[in-house]
Image (tube, rainbow, N blue to C red; front, top):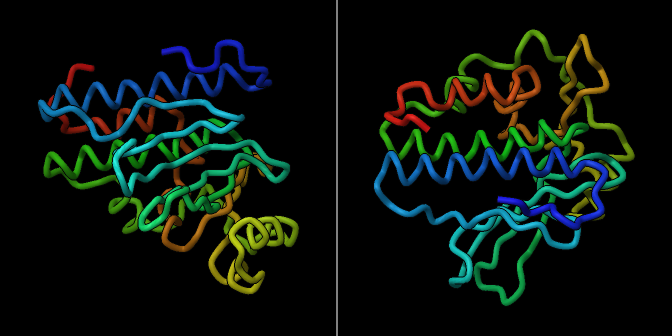
Length: 206
């Protein structure tokens, strides 16, 4: 599925890889459960990559990835009791691949739950922050950016968000909430390694 053809994106190849991997997980959902997934095919619009669920029905939701001055934003969108979606920043990544793994980890864990398997998130939560990562306070310019985007105070962002960086590769980092802390481990694995973890125990050949 080619969603970036004709788009003037410097990281078009990275977006296309993410789309292809997401589509693989949608096919796995059908293969394993026998049901069509409620998640729509990815769509690139105005520089944002949308991963909608339940569209075009009412109360649809979505995750989005958008390049920005502070990194790759992982956004959430909801239309609950709204005519137009409310969009807010959930996480920020220095690398598109890591933002993509954040999205893939979620859909993979949803399929694991559907099949009665332990989600990777719970395993990572029990294990705690990886020793390969360093956790610290969020940088002030990122705090300001998220506060402005989400319409909240800087104190709220400082309290909820932390910076997780790879010790051996400091330029690779993520800003995550406490609830998302377990997913900081995606910074330490490749797409292929994440895929192997998420498919462990699933009855799928895809």
